Image: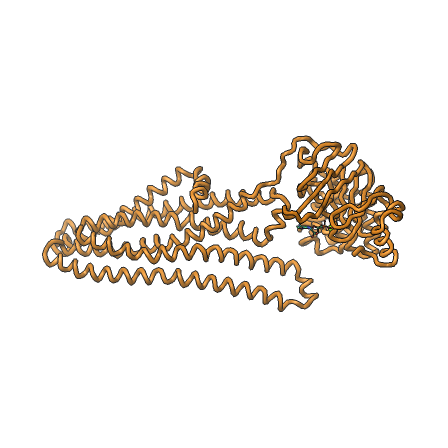
Length: 579
Ligand code: ADP
Ligand code: MG
């Protein structure tokens, strides 16, 4: 972890500094008392068992009990405090992350898959939480314990202590080596979890498609492949993780063998009492667990660092710029595209090239042309889902970027072939963003959208839950709910992106009637997949490969635009959709 990441993490801990200090004091207490516990063996052996001192016999058991009582208490208090801090910090990070994500610009969601984002909010935070609650504090506590015990070693016999403090750090080398490996594995593991989440989610969302194509086997195999990769990564991690302890233990046993040789010799020479030697050995054995914890911490902390970096990567992605300050009150004159170029990737693969287009207020402009021609892209630029790469878009002469984004979007309604519904009641879906609406207003909108009748036939009427993406409704019904939602929004600008293209002829007619109600007295820009729908427009714009070929009325275009004529003839001959 570089310094900056570390400093940022500290910022999150800052509000809890008092608790941190308290936890820290408890850790020192635990360390000191562990040392004392080891030390007490010396008077216990020498005083009680060798000298048979009665007073010592009375006092020592009490001293041992008190030592462990306080050590336990400190351990408990420290554990509670660090868990408390970790829960709070991650509570904050998780909330900040989610809030940040909803404000991220649309292109972020083109780049990151839903599963990947979910994994960062859920798995990565969990990993970091464990580090703050357990791994790091336990490590620090064990370091104090090590200090306490090492003091006992030196108090008993500095020669023996010196030998052991040289031998045991040798055990640290393989640990450092494994730590580096673990960090790499940690990154790969999180990636694999994200992939698995993505596969599950995508399979569940598209389950009907999968069944229709009878590709269950193929999808299941894809999961198995990723699952296999995940298993291998985990096994690799386990191999390293599990090798660490036995290896250290073996190195430790060699050290202890040496100590018994040397220590026995020193005791024989009367330079150390028997009690002193056993207290020494006890301290040495007690060192094993803290060393193990400290050694393992390296691996765990490295995994968490990968998680922290992935979390900060999202937090560092810039939010949408709400820079503008001019309130948007509605189009008075016109919306204008002035030499607009746009590329999704930011390079020179332009989805729109040199677009010049005027949409007069309260008029209907229709975009027609081949699929992939750039119609939807034009529509997406108006609510500023994306910003032009070059050129500008203005409303009444004001650059979109100078308008207050919230007031702009509040006055735009979008109805597209991709219908978006929440897993909430009909009522909540229609009144989305307008919690102030009365039932009468909602019903009126539903009637205008030709949705009232079928809503009344639902199990609980307006209170019926629509299920995920409105599964309980037909395509046309879903679209009419979306239209009702647009009606209550009472937008100034209406964007229609092939709103009827996914529907059968019958539903299309009723949805078209609903749309006609919605379009009244608004500035409308629509992408039309049928020239017949486009013909109602005041102006038709013909698009091909990101460029405007021609614009004008239907009759004019038939005369002057060969491509338009071709489209029209294709459809007149029964080919309903533009290909
Ligand atoms: P239309 O609506 O006329 O069918 P689009 O505006 O959707 O066309 O697409 C224009 C071009 O931009 C196409 O080449 C398409 O592949 C590309 N495109 C559309 N959406 C994205 C996106 N989110 N990321 C990258 N490229 C995109
Ligand atoms: Mg489109």
